[in-house]
Image (cartoon, rainbow, N blue to C red; front, side, top):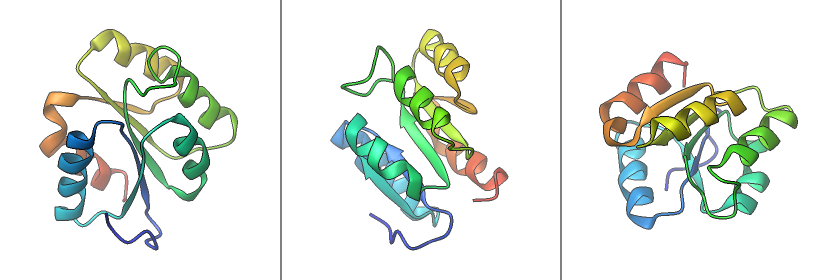
Length: 122
């Protein structure tokens, strides 16, 4: 995991260890600093430290597709980008309606995620 002292800290919300490894390695290789939340409680605790959030579309403990978590984060003043990733377009639409600023297909995270993060100034 990357040093979390960077002013452009990314919160990666992901429960699958394989995905944490793959996405984390990609973020590290691309020079991004990040911290990981593996569940809703950790995400609710860590999001205030982040300037951007990259989240799985389905996190255990969230109603039904992380929609409640996105609403909670937005309703509590987070104005940075929230980038959701999912293989389901239906879930993607629900997450965007809930407050996600961007949606990426899970199968196309690389190279799209680093490009998007850079376009956002991170």
